[in-house]
Image 1 (cartoon, each protein chain N blue to C red):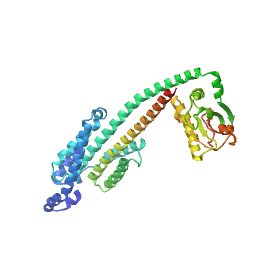
Image 2 (image 1 turned 60 degrees about the vertical axis):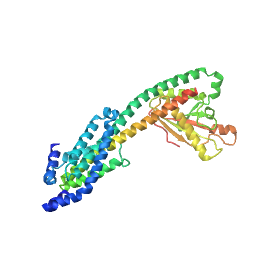
Image 3 (image 1 turned 45 degrees about the vertical axis):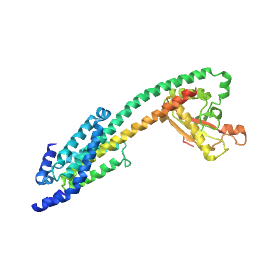
Image 4 (image 1 turned 90 degrees about the horizontal axis):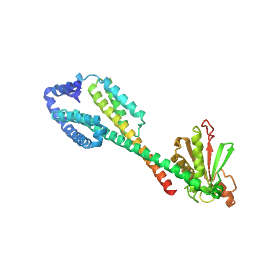
Length: 116
Length: 271
């Protein structure tokens, strides 16, 4: 948090912010975790946000290798939220499917009860 | 972009900044506006606030940061970034809220389903008790035989509406027996196979045979058998048990067979 503020301040002062950004190793770890979590609940290439998250993580990793730490952090932060949104979408869709199935069953039961 | 800027002289810096920041400024203020309206929407939605307060707070924090940065010259990239994060948090909050609403609704529906299931079971028992004996005799097309495919129960054509997939009320007795059997043998699974005679369109026969098998499966599921224990197949005109030349033979061929697994849940291979 403090790092982000100070780097933003530095950036505004002299646009030297880029060089003084620390390596966002922890953020990359968080992003990888979020991606793993999204995949674990069943997000795949059909979920647009997961595809975005994966692409941004790759870009972030290559920015890390170039020591472009600010770029890496920005990409990794976005990728983390992309992945979390992908996960939330998949879970919501699953709960929707479950609701539909329950409604189907209830309708079938009602119909059968009505027929008796 | 920042790295490039650093390499340039001081005089050029201001020029370059105002030059390249112009279009970025525009796209960042668009992103900011989009994030603002997304945040507004989730903030005013009491369901979202109740079920995903943390994400709403984070959306607000990121938005505030983007707002603050937008008053500085040359910070367009950062504004876009925090606007993006804010937008994402709002979307995540929306999804999480939809999820918990669905879950609440599912819990209620599940209770309703169980209530109806019980009512249906009782109603079916009652209707079985009311059935007169001679009718029972007539519908005992219920036959179980030990074949090379394992234990097979045959539901005859008379249990279905003619040419339809609906089960008649007279099938209740058979169905309840099946349910009872499966409840007493919780490891056994079944494959429900539909068959037709050879009259009419081949494809329609296949579909009807499959639909009839599915109807039997649905009833079992409705009466509390786990759907994971049930496989459904339609075979259409294949595998007749009698010749299709006579009406009686055709009636025998129109059937649903229920193949039981052994006690370990191992089913014979599908045909």
